[in-house]
Length: 418
Image (cartoon, rainbow, N blue to C red; front, side, top):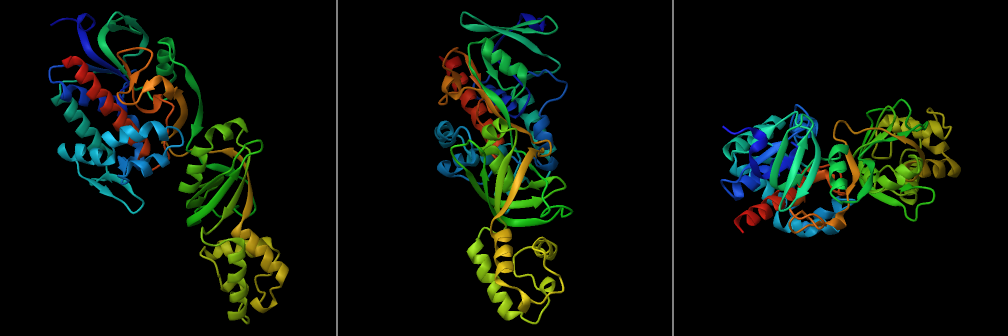
């Protein structure tokens, strides 16, 4: 058998994550007999797949309409519209079903394997990789990629030289992959964290971790920014501030501006998306009329926990033993503002479990999104988070990985036929 470094490949995929595996498998399946290899710098593969969704793997999202689907991507909406018409969540569901993996949809639209285990997805990938005869090489750090004639020469850290007709860069946000792209002529959009929680030290939130709200309306303002950002969704008080879907979406859409402001911002929260300051005032006036003889702390008029209602009263300086009849106009106005538009100061960022996402990467303008091929370097392809594209939480980042990997695979297969 020939040594590894003497065999020319048809495709080498750099990166053993979601996009890399999906691209390699689909390329080998699109053109049987094609020599495909995945090279991964670390000892482990599919690490984000393993931890996604708390170990259940949030494979995709049940949003099959491309125009709506792209609104979940702070960067890349325009570029992904076409690709999602070719391979979107519906295609993803079908792909896994054909390989024995049924997906289920949860109330919020997230889709998981029926087994509730990410290992099911990993096993499906490994089975498909083996069946398609895709090679895998771990602990294989690529230090250089050179364009040579109609192909590429890859140098590994251990000195081996690999040659391939095509290369798919799918290294996520790893600096190594970005450096390779830059060396091949691509410009990079600076990286900035996305999908993170807000650090907020405010008396309204102190000692109330675990308090949740089904659907808030939150507006983020950053000094010097030309716009503000508004999101609706669930929220959760944490030990350090606020988390939950609405907060994570804000962190994603305002990722660059937040980074530039050193994560200093003002956050205005309507604790129920349906209850503005004016609506809260009406609710309180009606509650006062109905509960005149009752104790304030015993009658919570808002859709929140009793503890949160008591905190609102406390911050307005209200005696918990006070009756509703004793509530005056000034106190009603104060409570209405606190529930209908609380002003909080964001002082920093936290993290969102292991599902970190980065804004930034290879410039979108330098990639042909019909094929995921480089516009600057023929035969070089990109997929996944290495591109300046990122989605909010809910399976959207994986869908970007599946779509990019599949499109690149189809184009590489057609090139091999030609």
